[in-house]
Length: 136
Image (cartoon, rainbow, N blue to C red; front, top):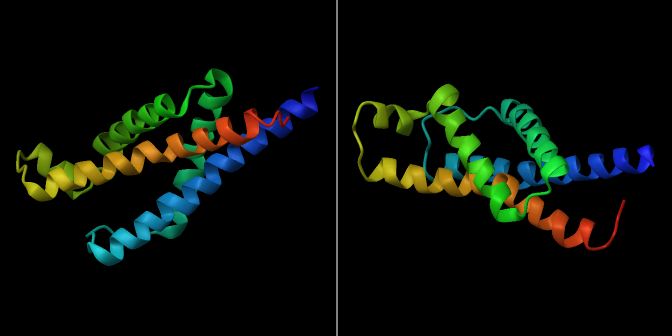
């Protein structure tokens, strides 16, 4: 019984982590190329960050089993807390300096999408395929 719970937890974490790598890392690279984001692209740092972020998302999902929208909103809130308290990219610094323009609004929209999908899509996939199929 304990072995099944551990395997299920590892599957859930794997889904969260793999989607973080597939979606968020791809978005980071594409946005860096297309939009020319001023921050440097640290792929190993992104992988380490999302391994930790995905771990917390998987824990919340395992213990609360929230639906995808609620998981996406949790991710969005936590993501913005991290953006405003630790990461502080240029658009956040512009908000602090009250220099709110079109570039800041676009950054907020893109960042909102980015954070929402970090836990929203993995929880959707888990609910749709792992839970409905009865996988351990």
